[in-house]
Image 1 (cartoon, rainbow, N blue to C red):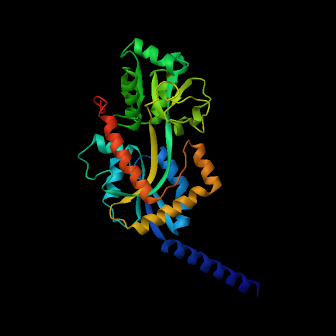
Image 2 (image 1 turned 60 degrees about the vertical axis):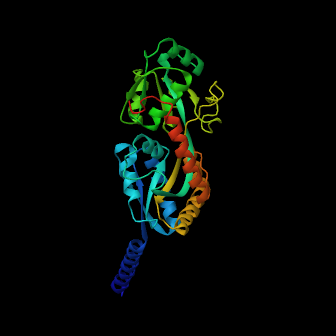
Image 3 (image 1 turned 90 degrees about the vertical axis):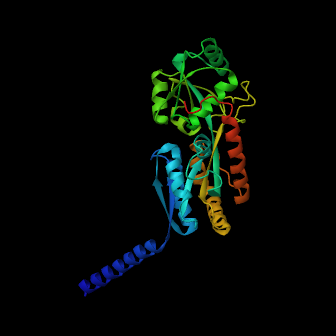
Length: 321
């Protein structure tokens, strides 16, 4: 009798497991493309929201990294995907930057996409090694100004958002530094820690782990308001550069032609995810200011950012060098 009971119990469990697998397989699959490598800010963000976003959409959200060519490979993949909401791009401001710098792409950064959900924004921090002995932005500017092209700044590569952000500041401040293009933020931090470069524009997200490191000196943030994560640090605006602002937006983009009803469904799901206190707190710890907005407002932001990005780059000589 016991053996029969055990056998029936096992049968029920196997049936339940089989139904669970079948149910999971029947779920709609959404591919969330990250156009950068694993461990990047966009990758961490995408993986953090993928599960709760999938729950809200009653789907499985699979994060796929398609890195290369400054994020344009992943963007091209999504631009040419079927416009049904099942393929999304985890995009950020660099998406527009690449579009301005490389006008012969197989897609248009604005016209080839629809804005599905604005997910937030983040600022950058101008960082210098403590060994450079510039305790504030004014001292930094004075020292670099006194010796044009005597010092280096690092970026995550030619035409990257860290490159153009720094080049834009140097242009406004009337400074000249030698550009050292690297492969990513990790290399930037290593060069700063070693004192081999004298400055870099690093995302607030990337600086979270180094706020207390005595080898680095954060000089100013790049938004017009103080950072929630580093409130003691002055802004560029407060430090004498009221017209300089360099921030990055993040959001989910879908291929052009995606129905508005599908976009609004994704938008509502994302808003619910960000209303969850624990998720919101975790994202804010990464230096992200989380905010939702309707589809139409997000698309308006995208068009404005595209125009502003193009205008900013006209003031920078040789942004790819």
